[in-house]
Image (tube, rainbow, N blue to C red; front, side, top):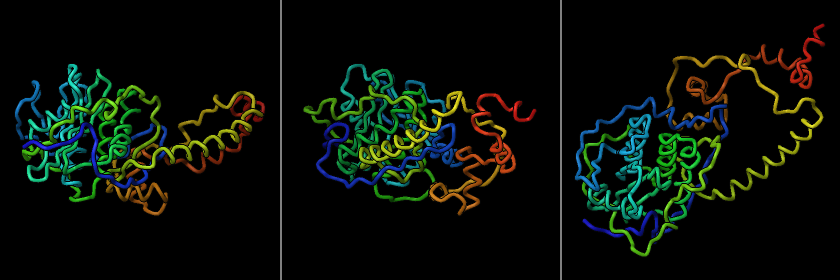
Length: 342
């Protein structure tokens, strides 16, 4: 069945964006969605599909480039997306499309494999071409989203891709994409037993790469943490400007204080012994509870223990911290403790 979809995300329908939620949590910058997905059951990958450009589907996720370290985890995230939204999605990682337009390549995959419902034409293809440094989200008419929304969703993976964390980057995109659609399903990831036979339609020959998601401006760092599966992209620019303004104000205050210290503030190191070791076992809670606990730490002790177990938050020893604070900062960073004790 053939249907129209203008490129990566071009649509004729506007969707009101919901603000994206960013958290600066933990020293390792761990994606909470990855941690929570680790406890979910993985669906069997028994479906088959027609070969397209030498590629045969391996489930919700197909990695012909062989770069995913934990494809099963991304598979689980894709299955959760299908369950939550009711839209089938094919996540495909290739080394390159060989010069073929990325929108056309993604649409060809979706139509050949029959991604989505034949009645609703709501298939979605998330394509990552590694060597091309290009990501593409192709949607059928039944799953249209505003172009600006999909552009912002694509950007969620950039920082992770730049660090070589392709699994986490794809999960970040799936998480943001999931929040862009109304919730329609349950909690357990859907099992892949073959696509329903729909497609994502024909690409518009007038569409160019501006509609795509070029990964050229990859962000270095990526300490922002995308949480959960119910959040979407929207009003991102204004939010970033507000956050940057607040951060710059705080930086000025900190820089002013550190200027009075010798040595420089970058030499300050928080010792690991201030923190208690993460427990090896503990509770597992739904994403919604974990997100709520992150907004108001201390209200849900079980959720807090789950976050601690997965390393999203760190718990310090009060006695050790109080003792540590007795030493003046400028003496601590300049190795003058012996003068105080002697």
